[in-house]
Length: 429
Image 1 (cartoon, rainbow, N blue to C red):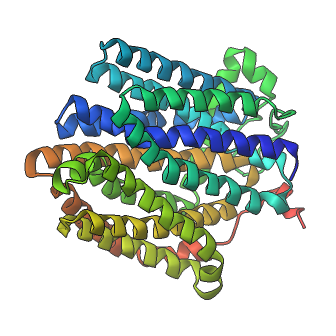
Image 2 (cartoon, rainbow, N blue to C red):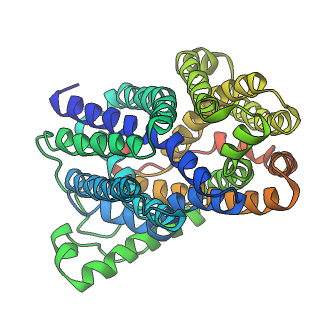
């Protein structure tokens, strides 16, 4: 699929190794400084809160500027934050507030990395190769971020608190070098006439105008408004985003204090906590080789209902179990159906959204994902503080069950909706 794709793939895999290391090390670092469920949950919240603040702007900005350079600059900023955190840890002056501030700054840079990075693949590959390209990127995420990184992060944290974050800084810096090898990623073209979405907005002008003037900043907000209007007027996509928001609220409530649940309730230790994420990744890898067979034998609507039903059962199982090995089995099943759900929901959304709005609608979807996580983790911290470490699982079970009842029928309408084609899509073979 070309040299540029190989550089993108190498950069993505390398960055995901570092992110996977931090996936286990960051909660362990926070838990080593405080036993407060609220502060532990705050660490996760401050990594995702930037999506609520900057997510929509990142989507619009990624549509106007050189996306490769945007990824490089944002990754460089992440490396600086990590190196500063390592310095604080080595000198012994780090405290919970410095760690939480680092989480917010790192999360802010990650918003721009993920948003711009997600738009690079369609610029490098032919449409026929996008499925294979996405599969290879997703495999890298599962292997590096979910499978190999977390146990490595837990082991390095046991050796010294700064080691996992130093390795992450090296990985992120190397990712900058690798993605710089991509030959070119032109600024995406902007229409010179009215939008084909029928939203009635004014012409958006050129990327160069947006880069150097106050009117350009206004046009970024106009782009955001156009995407939001289209989403509001499209009931199937709107309902899909709403489902993702609600289920992320219930899912994130116990996940925000998962490190305390694993280490104090299940007595699994730091390495056992890292193995939970590894078990989830193993389930996801099985799903990658099973998806084609499932797609041939089950409709998307049926698979979506099965996945959301398993989500309800998963919360109940975690609330009841007291054994670490049972928790690992539950997490394996979670990884399997979570990958299936993510693949289906992304595919359905991409089929229904015109090309020129893909970035902005995807950013709204991401804001819904992380907005739900922020709300859920905040609730989970408060609930665990008041009623114990299993209480967030009971909250998640009740909330997910109620949400499933409300969305059971609309799922069929979402899957059967007709795609909205823009001119470029209509001319594709």
